[in-house]
Length: 391
Ligand code: PMP
Ligand code: GLN
Image (cartoon, rainbow, N blue to C red; front, side):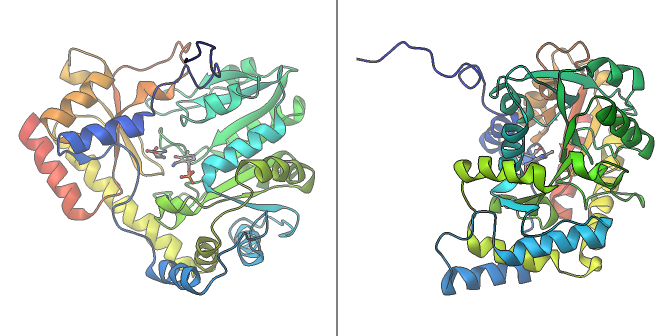
């Protein structure tokens, strides 16, 4: 006899992620998938080859709980070389099965029921359920389009004595925003004032455009002790299916994050860790080349969208560009529009409204996210389809 007892209230109330829904629709309609963000060219062959060799030659048994020494050393060296951040690889770096696990570990390590956690809308979708599952309350504050600026007044309004942490995603998915140094200083000041922590989702750290460089919040005065910094090999090496992530932070935080990690996944595929350790040690040229290539693709997408009469919002980093569809006078929501173009123009995109809190007063209805990390011929074909449909 089946039971009617209610299951977990956070997860039983959730739908399927927009990425899975739109990718499914793209397959169904044979559309080009500019929805879910993943590159269609795999990252460096030397990284993949090294991992493949390790898969055959081993080790293939449980690696150390916080990650193989080579990868933890590589993360610490990367953070030092790129940002001047000093982390002890043995006690202050943890390897995880993707940034998604890293976020979950950090959230579980920091939050208790009754705490408040701040997230910035539009936000990456896993933050909300991960926080709510701890019993903590989410406070959302929006950055405002078209420039996605963060107002001091709005941010200050969501801080209070219950605030335990903020999740800061820069470069930001889906808004493609890189937080300015003034905004970082504002956040740092409030963290000091309210004695709070930051979980810094920096998975797009190497994907910044037009000469911008990524500045971790942890590099600001006093912030190293309050920040957990998260990176992802998925984005940095165009290997999203590998799900290898890493966390760096002060020992008083990572020691507890490790306790969460040990009971979530315990550890991560060793062969992939060897590959990523090699990747993080590659020349600066690799990282610069990745950003330059994506910037070129961004420019192509911008021309395409503007060419069909869609204004685009600034795109300072990540895989994504936002277009404003309000001029089309489309009769329906942004979600309907994305379904419509997937079925009819045969190009899939993702509606921005899904990246807002259900109670938000700032949900846009005419913004759509397109992904541009695709081969040139795929981007050209997408452009042709959009031109044909809208032209
Ligand atoms: N954070 C953001 C902002 C992302 O866009 C993603 C995307 N995939 C993740 C975290 C999760 O990264 P991973 O695939 O390494 O779990
Ligand atoms: N980060 C990717 C995006 O924003 C999707 C990741 C996923 O599907 N879980 O499109």
